[in-house]
Amino acid sequence: MTAYGKQEIAELQEAARRHLWLHFTRMSSYTDAEIPVIVRGSGEYVYDQHGKRYLDGLAGLFVSQIGHGRTEVAQAGARQASELAYFPLWSYAHPRAIQLAERLASLAPGDLNRVFFTTSGSEAVESAWKLAKQYFKAVGQPSRYKVISRDIAYHGTSMGALAITGLAGIKEPFEPLPPGGVRVPNTNFYRAPAFVADDRAAFGQWAADEIERAILREGPDSVAAVFLEPLQNSGGCFPPPPGYFQRVREICDRYGVLLVSDEVICAFGRLGYYFGSQRYGYQPDIITFAKGVTSGYAPLGGMLVRDELMEPFVTGHASFLHGVTFAGHPVSCAVALANLDVFEKEDLLTNVRTHEGAFRATLERLHDLPIVGDIRGDGYFYGIELVKDKATRETFDDDESERLLRGFLSQALFEAGLICRADDRGDPVIQLSPPLTCGPEQFDEMEQILRSVLTEAWTKL
Ligand SMILES: Cc1ncc(COP(=O)(O)O)c(C=O)c1O
Image 1 (spheres, rainbow, N blue to C red):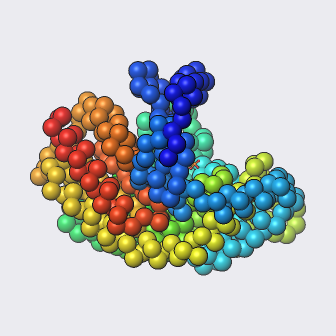
Image 2 (image 1 turned 90 degrees about the vertical axis):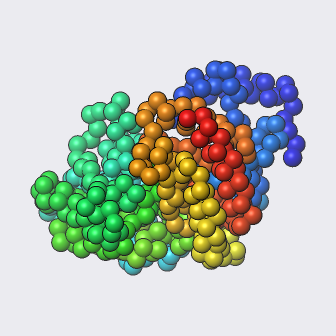
Image 3 (image 1 turned 180 degrees about the vertical axis):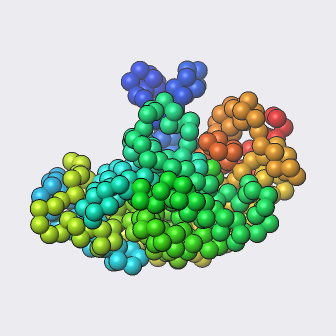
């Protein structure tokens, strides 16, 4: 793989330092260190400016489902740009948005038949909340505006989505946020309260019932929607306990609250199904999606909505008073269709379902390391929780966490050739979410790199 020349590398570093602002990044970490520059990708691997290869264990950012360097998908985008690069979905339609909406509706569970496109996941979440609010006003329940979501859950960064996000640290600088965000416990069984710590089903029932308690506390007439990921990412992959979503569905039905399945990560094969709700067997009223719908070959997001939620907007003078310029961009829609063709041609969902057991078993070999507390997830989506004491499950204090994750792990894993995420927005975890094309060879590579880096991390404590 060709590396960039010395001069080009130096120029890029200088320009990056001077002009580029990295997201959620302490720019000071790069005062004396090189900013990593990824220049190309092929399959499950990406390459930096020096020509060094990395296993993309996070699919970019939970995005690159089909892997990198797929020319047929890139060409679908190029063809569309030559034919019709842009036209808005405000009052007009274009063929690729129509075809993609029809195809997504055919893949989605139940009567989720309407697609409202956005450009990102945050916009999708924002749109779902806005739809819930306008819908309830339209059907004569104007006091419903609150949204329930779970502790430590990430639902995006725009002001509305941030109000739904459950991470205090990234909300605080932007307070006051739009009112109405209400938090309930997440489904981290590893840290379940003692009275349900031995029984997953009882834990699930308790966690679901906390949603009911929140609805009653807030006043049922004020609650519009519950936003839940099928498998919660932030905090390190919390799968739903058995019966959890079935109970949540019952509660939502009882109080007339919409169930929004935020599948920005969990859709498009991450859990071995087109939609995460299909894996866990529940019917949402709205699904929000982004990321994997295009595998990152162009940006796109959106929401899939039950027919009933569209009804107030189908007749008369009413319209959903919301839109963004680039939503459902023709190039992104063409790319999404080509991406879904790859899913079908290569039967990627079957690949995930066939190999997910091997993925889990390979990661579970790491249980012999003293720093590994819990390994959890489903499909091609895992979190490894790190602990100071396996027996007591004691976690690291802020100082240790800072030294371990920021000071050592992120950099060491990258240097060892694995892109994954060391995250301490909840308890410290390593997150893995590789392209859906991966198999045993990549699982072994991940395990070996993690084993050697986590072994070294333990000696640094
Ligand atoms: C569950 C969930 N919702 C929403 C978002 C926001 O998506 P975006 O970064 O595309 O705005 C994310 C991003 O990771 C997410 O994981």
